[in-house]
Length: 145
Image (cartoon, rainbow, N blue to C red; front, side, top):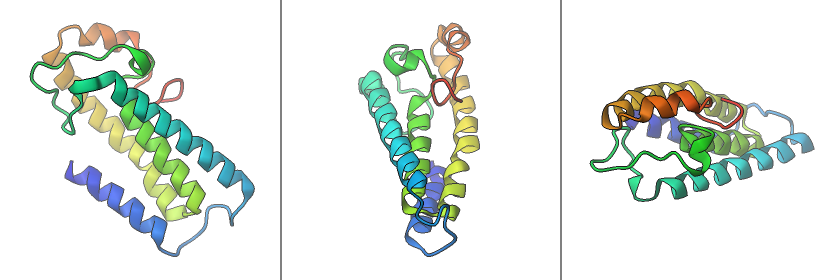
């Protein structure tokens, strides 16, 4: 959790500091940034909604939690992480921060590893997780990652 919030903080600092620009303010970066930001927000909200009271900030599933397999969880096993990645990448395109964009892209391997760790915990807590995992191809972002 500490590493995650440090990475989030580094992205925020990069967004507010002067540095190399991604596009020089090009319209394509604004459009792509807005689309990714909106898609990320939508994905995260849908994932939070599907989890309901099972939401926890820790990778370990809460005691008595239910395995989420409906909604966006039919398409990706960790869509909140995917939503966060899209939010940050889109945001960094909007503010035109190359350093921030690099840090946002670094969220992919970070959340990939975190999801892998979490999947071991989920399999331990929920015996049906292995079947679910084998039936849902995408780990973070539906139809992409």
